[in-house]
Image (tube, rainbow, N blue to C red; front, side, top):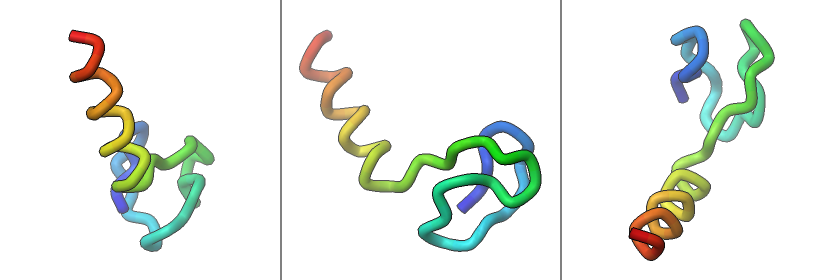
Length: 41
């Protein structure tokens, strides 16, 4: 899983970046966000 903030690779399933501490979005949460956004368009 790549951190969107710093670009560091993290372990799959990690919730926070091991380099910068930024929260990481899982594939599931990204799918939920995309679904939510498309419903509101």
